[in-house]
Image (cartoon, rainbow, N blue to C red):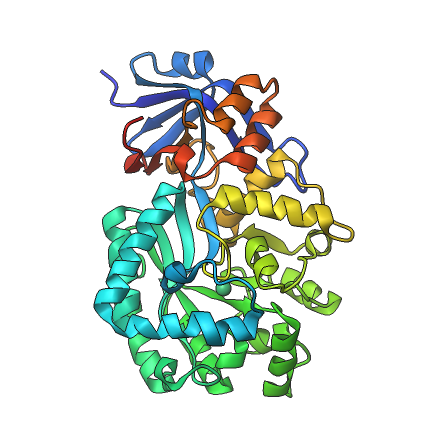
Length: 435
Ligand SMILES: [Zn+2]
């Protein structure tokens, strides 16, 4: 008797980067995903996979679609409750909307409640892995890690660091930031599915000394990630130039303290110079593209083609609460829409949208050996999509004649109501009631 499970559904994943490999998309109209002990044993046409293990228990999800779990490469848990504060630009929005809510995270009860809601919202939208900005407070950041551990999601997060620009309640000293970060790393880094990311809020809110401390942390512990923001808004960029008169550009600020590199994910980069793109590519630094946020805050249109041409790695992030929601399908659609109206935009086909929402994030986070696609040996992190019967997406999928149409319809119309079940390493982390 086999203890494996064989999931039968329409299956899509990207086995490679479709911006560089035209054959990256794998699609199986009647597909099989064979899972044992939380790992993927095989993925392909159902009959073919069935032959590799005739004893496996079949889970019949025909009529639905299975995708790799979504990877959100940039999101802020303390901002869950301020989604939708429209009409402001970055610095005004930070002052009026984001930072006052961030200050409420000093209340650990409020922070814990927000963390629990945030993590369950990720799972309910099919996001199995996320790089998350914690809070400016250690206890609140710990509450996110605790909530993630209970929920079973892969969360990379860290204490948000600032010692200038933000209100005094959100500032740390370099010494307290070092002490609190070190303690959080000791408690949570590499605990189960959790990893720690050194998280200077952005250049404007951190002094040279704070960035130097970030560099020390990265040097003292193996496997840490780094996350921050870069080149989001023109006013912000002007202020960063004033704050760091020695820096040639925004990238140079982080680069000076070795906070660029293969383990670093910087959000936005809407207004990057060619010299910066060259440096980001050379250091293998990844950019988290957040199209909803860029539009909502009027930050600008992301130059995706320039990033691709320069060889800069790009993933996708919702950037809640600057962004407009937790769902990565909606974010994939927004990336497509922004590129359609961008001067010199890329037309994102189904493969590229799926890649940006899954494998690209895994690559940016240094986790592509383990997640992001259905290649054998990887962890069985996946989302089962089954749109509500009688709804618009259901009607569209019944009419769809090609696999590309199914995938682009999912990204166009799919929300949390279409997420039926979500698994991480084969274990259920979300199940929709009543379907
Ligand atoms: Zn952000």
